[in-house]
Image (cartoon, rainbow, N blue to C red; front, side):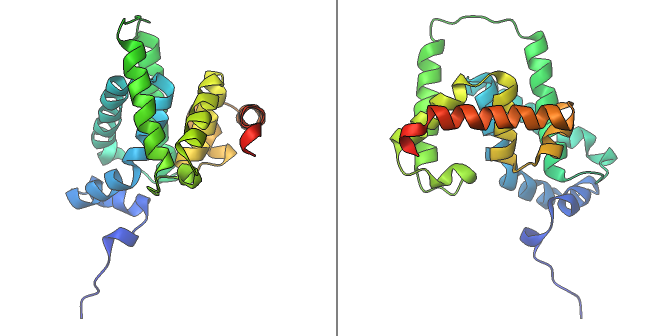
Length: 197
């Protein structure tokens, strides 16, 4: 009797190996599981929805291109968010900082949409416990005030569930540097969100 497996219970690593072998359903499941976490990580870094959407697409294209060479030497999430980090590094290296007259409106609109998503009982990531739009907005504002390196470390932990070692590997820094960035980010967020504690 053939054993029936439920692909939704497969590990990310086994799904990626199956996708590398040509199984498109495995890719769809990986995309479903990780699309929003990667998008929020990228969006919090670039702050413009259209750019985040393009970068997200680039990340998944990179995953598809590298699939034949994939080896599960680290957690899939670490590998995926490293792809996202590398794409962000490329973007910031080549992008010129253009100031758009419409930029503030778009960023404000995107932030409102994200606040509504975070405040809703959507089940998205560890931020799902936020009780109100006001708290969600306060959190996003506080995250925006963090220096980029601290914000990145915090988002990798919040969105990807990474530990310090994985954050260090993803961002290419030492364990102590990643730990320090995360500690400073938490300390600053706690200070900024004191009224909600």
